[in-house]
Image (cartoon, rainbow, N blue to C red; front, side):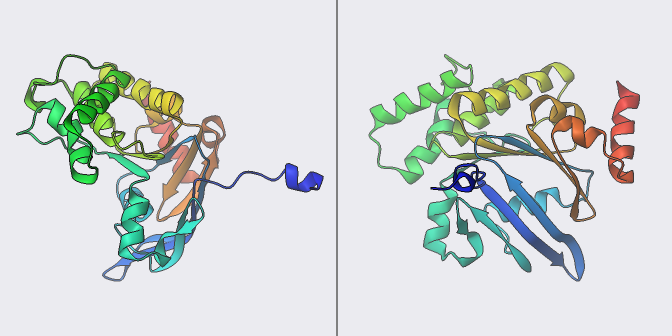
Length: 256
């Protein structure tokens, strides 16, 4: 083995290469290139309409690109058949913007849902896993509560417990702090960091919340008009001279 072999950077958990997508002739993604390291938290930052959600849908194969590819642990999503795609999706957990809990189900049943749908675990084992995941996100003794009885931050944490029930390698967060007050936003930021540190998951966060991004990100990619126009460590992106990035951060600075 040569020195160059030992110094070679590890393969990314997720790699996006030249991704392009258009709807009705309107280009949304115009050649996105991005690497997400294993065990890191990458925040894809950008304004409304910049293509963040479209990019996320490509990461889990809900959309197929017009050109380019998404590679997850060495597998190109576009080359997988439906069976292989379903297998790959088990590597992902998803925390939705509004938690997306089932209103008619208790907390216990919400977290147990993916276990009942995708495994043959006996009830006692399901109960053990549910309580383990709820404990991991700092929630106890709320099995019988319904979503309507929970605060916004608690709903997010139940959503995360459900997302990690099948022990995914990657957790995607869709605008996790939208509509939350500053204190609850801090709780959600801590939740994301805890999941990364305790579980070693690779986290991908879609957001327009600069403050949250600066708190949680190892790597920020700024998406503007369908392209990554700046990326790097939070402080590097903050110093970017790209006009769209500079304007975005200046607006945040005015609110601090």
